[in-house]
Structures are given as structure tokens and as C-alpha cells.
Length: 231
Image 1 (cartoon, rainbow, N blue to C red):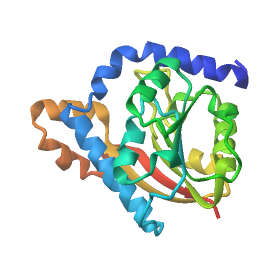
Image 2 (cartoon, rainbow, N blue to C red):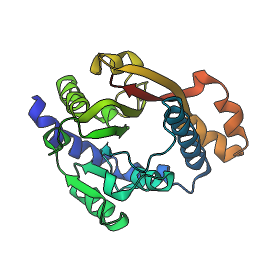
Image 3 (cartoon, helix red, strand yellow):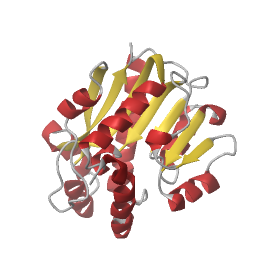
């Protein structure tokens, strides 16, 4: 499969995963716990970069899905006219458009082809997108596009899992070493987050209070949240 075939392959993989979407219902205690942990870690990463206000920052999310992360960013203080999302799958793009303010721009299609001016963004976010890309060359093409969009002093915000899922051949872990390869000029500030989802689901069935106890062990966390600074 060539690099140009990867977007079509991604769409097919996501179609196979629809049956598993119920596992990520935000009303589930383990999903809510992971979400809140990630939000706290993101605020910490922004604070460590000296960011105290986000209302004037321009941010693009790659693979925005139905808009959940963009809604969170609006709650964090980002202005809708400074946010934009890119989504490959038409169904998810329509869901996002129905949920998000009209002033927030949505781009449908392959993110590597998105009409975004070089150096125009303060932040570019990706959350569990690269783990769905199985073609190394396409990963690098997308990383290069994201880097090109960033203004000097801007940053990539990266959230993804680092280990393979043996039960799901449609995804693969992206270790921190690979993140460094994708953004060789970036300066990384990384934090390990998110209790392994299968373990979190099992713990929540026993009692939700087990979640913070298990999550206190870094080796049980499967994702990283990274700020990749562009000098």
C-alpha cells in the first residue's frame, strides 16, 4: 500500500471500530476518570510553557472526530474563531458541525492536504490519530504538515498510546522515541497518563475508587501527553 492510500485505509479501519465506540461513553466512570486526568495534565503542560491565557491562541486539531476535544478547548477558554478542526470521515465531520459554534472552522478530508497557512497556528493538537496510521511515510507526511503550520514559539499537543494492542491490528502504539523521530527539531515535555483501558474497565466494574490507586503506578499508564515546542 502506498502513502496515498493511507487515508482510505484509515476510513475502513474506523468503520470496523464503530461497534467498540460504547466503551468510550463519557458516562462510564473509567472514561470520565481518564478524561479528567488528561485535562489536568494538559493544563499543567500549558502552564509550564508559560501560557496563562488561551483566548487569543490559534489552534488546529487533526482528526477532530465529532468535536469532543474542541468542546473541551472552548470550555478551557479558547475562542471559537481561533479554533479549527480537520476530520477525514464525513459522518464524524457532520456530527462535529452540529455540535460546535458556527465561528469554529471545520475542514473535511485528508489533513496533509488541508489549506492551512504555514506559520499560522500557535498550537496543533492530535489525540489518538497517529496510532491509527500504519504507514510510516504517511505518519511523517502528517507530522511535517503539522510542524509547517506552527508559528515559531508554537507547539504540538500530542496525546496517544505507546504500546501495541494485540487484540486490535488496526492500531499500533507510538512510543516516545517515534515522536522524537517525527519531530526531530522539537523540544519535548512529556507526561505518562491514562490507566491501561482494559485494566481501567475491569477496575471500574469492581469499584471506581480503584482507578486512582492503580493509576498511581506509572507502569500501568499506556498513553503519553506531550508538548512539542517549536523554537
